[in-house]
Length: 221
Image (cartoon, rainbow, N blue to C red; front, top):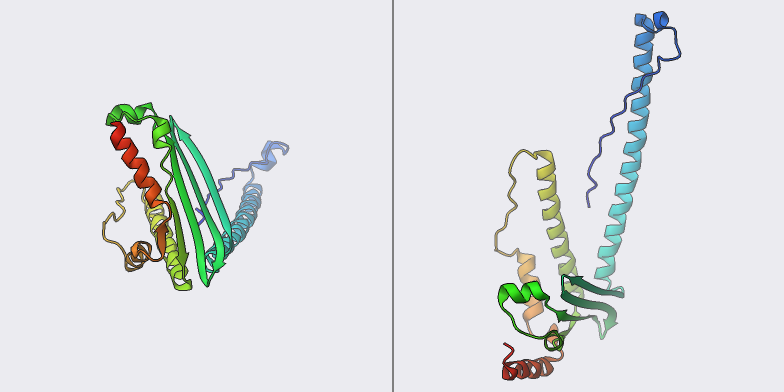
């Protein structure tokens, strides 16, 4: 997390209370320039110090969070969004170590699609029907898996920061982020871990299949 540098522009003028003839002498003007320069330098120095302290603390916090992921510290995430009728709820939990594996659980539900999605994609399905689908996953990661998860997150963050930096340094130029569909070696490794059928499992597969069959028979799809 790189903090974007800010620029402070300060204009000071302290001539109002002095006699005009005295204020306009070369010596007084030079002295005033020195005072203004010193004032600006001090303010910029203090601001730079504060920025440096803030960035150091932000980096330390990020490092701690990465370490928390590696050590399987318990964490819980629960979010609900409603965007013009598209209702989605997501829940994720890091439950700590179970049998020497870091246990993750995930679930998601679509409470409704919203009229815009239904109109655009010509979908005629009731919200109460789509609401039946709530896939539930459980993953059990090794220490090596967690290390790779953190590595993938860091790589993605670095790539995003580079793109932002390029745009800010040369806003007049068109910067195109590398959108190659090719996965990095670490991404390939993570994908293999998630899809090997052992690390992560769909806990309610039969229930979802039954729900889907009911929808097909009802003619809503």
